[in-house]
Image 1: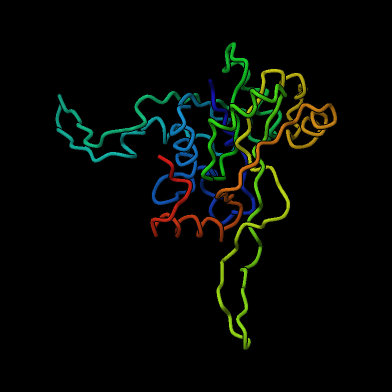
Image 2: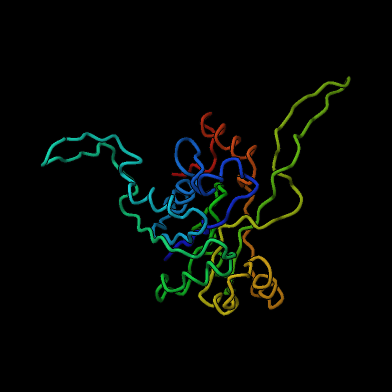
Length: 260
């Protein structure tokens, strides 16, 4: 079963970084966030990926075309009969990655529609965005989707808080401080979606349609939109602060999304 990852947006809220590379290629601990997302899926047995490329898609193509060069120590023998030896063992050797051009200006529904030809006869596929991580059990989410019998299942999450949470001690001091915790109230779409192939009937034929607008609204109205709640860690990378936060967590050895 395929994992479709939306990698084509311009990431305008991270313009200081995405002016030169697409947001999915921004590094966390030296590897693109896209790699981290793919590793989450691979940890649950899903290793057949379709990447929907758009803005600066050539950068993503170059990364995977030269994957061993980008991720390994290399010994070179120079000369006319030169050769190279890659020293690092690659846990990703069994991955299949389809790099699909879906247009620089195409919106999310249009990008998904454009990769239908790469999904074959699969009745279902997994779907996510190229800019968020979490300790999401995608295998359990898929089973939740199948049990529902509905066309689309989204993983719902508590959004991270916008401000630091302060617990006050008696006497006016601060007992504890938690930097931007996830809130306990409210749910949002956390990505990590599961879809029936019937979803394509809702996407239309326009590149100017957002999956999150008409298609999802229609699915909800028809009772075909399912939710699978995730109460664990989840963090998008929409701002430079969040980009920095994810790197700090990785560097400190406390990255909850590292489930591999």
